[in-house]
Length: 439
Image 1: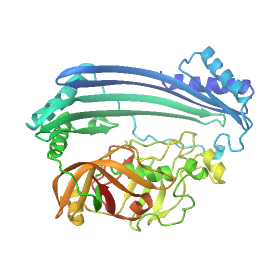
Image 2: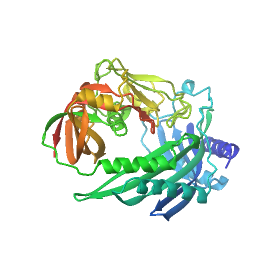
Image 3: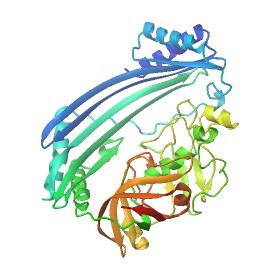
Image 4: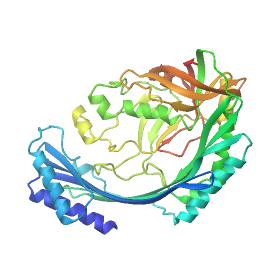
């Protein structure tokens, strides 16, 4: 389906909703297609093509609302979906905070954010790349004993969001990746690790060979693991796991958690919750950014915004519903923050951070779910390395790190310049003064 088809389906949905008596409505129409392949020990395990589409709508009768969806874009199917939503809405309870985002907040300018870079990749080429990736990893070290496979994926999609304010927003995007997961073995047992690359533009991907070698290097480093003595130690979260810390932060300042009074950061706007040297902000208009968007899930214009300035919390992450619950204005964040960036003014790479820390633990993997956003209590399974005199000494695994997010945030000593750019949260390695570690 092309832009015209998606726009037509959205317009038809809104027209039928109006004819059914809805006072307001919005609709999202999307289509996507992609190719994914996984190769293990040189043999193709899976080869998948996907071609999906969907239409989701919400209708409002005053403050009553209901939603429905369909994967059939025929006029009759759309009419049936609208009628179903309208029928349900008549029986829902009115909610004073329900409704579309305010009309004057709709995005006006929709510049090209360079999100769309199709990869002309056929199955044979994808298989060849996945095979090359895995083979490079298997050949990189004699201690690599097995593989969980090399993978390649390429996806592209487009969507239209429209509402009865007259807003119509079109967006399209691509996402491509290459990954490899390997197993190494020694007398003590087996260890697993991985490498990957992801980008909107295939030209920005790391080579398949380098991904395989990265996976091998990471995996072999985890051999000869030793237990760690229970105690309180400085901790460095490696850049590829550090985003989890800041996901906890954004969860704690999300409007839903705030108006439900279920966050340890309730009523903390204007207070210092990070060290003064830290700035946390979002950049929704980065070219090729994995989180870039011109408008949010309600059509509200996205804007660059600081959430932390000089360590101080500037506000909450809001959509129109949570904003109304709190007597505030939406921040254009339905769908979350976009390209959240952590800036601590540091020039340290990971090697320099380890040297500055001296003795402590480098965390390279987090396991399980152990974060309580209500209280801030933090307890996670982890794997990583013991560091002495600023250098990695040996691998450690099967240990737990624990603290409270309040203390962890304020205890950040530095954020490295080794920025992790393979996701929606852009951060370097994070050094925290002290956490409890138990083997």
